Image (cartoon, rainbow, N blue to C red):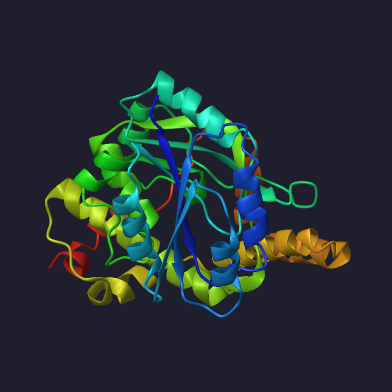
Length: 323
């Protein structure tokens, strides 16, 4: 039987977590897979470490720095197996991840995409799981058709290489490239949910600022704007033309509470427990509604987890978005 899986790994300034990530791949219970690593020039030792690995399954492609989205599309083009498995260099794949993925592929070979659950890592120090949409392919498609975005943990995803390339791959004009790809995949193919925790997702201080969260939120709303443009047959405008209008939707208190909740988990991973408790209390004080909703997500209360805001918010301001 030919190899079905290639793990795609974008590498840039990936220390100090890169070694643990690679060890988690080499420790997989299923050994028949390949790794394509797009290794971009950097000075933190990532390049030297990747080039020091001697394993026939690993192919290192070294190149100058480019954007993450371009690296993701390059990984898709370099993948010569039916499936490309996403992996980030600060997360870990649990030992049975690829074995379980292969089991699901055998059950649903015509799917366009698989995804699993992820928990915050290290799991013995952090609390909670990555906020995730759960449902059948039909339920996920209905969510998209209603104008909302899907919420998946990107490093848990496996993509059918041919099918994702057939719809254009990742959109290189976007920064929130994943949620844009999810709705396009859901509209064209079945997305299969694997109800298992197969990935440890690490939160760290490298991207922890309210400013970044606000920018990411607005760019995520732009993905929803593109979806609504598609559903209603409207011509979308460039991001900069609608950024101000999108910014008016940003829930600043909720985003500040989200930052503090992330800070709590980072402090827990560093075993700074008193400071972590303070950060958690500040998160609740900043937005009790957001904090409570996030806790309820952990128990999967039955309401579907989605990204985005009510589509009516856009449609009521049609002149601002589609003049």
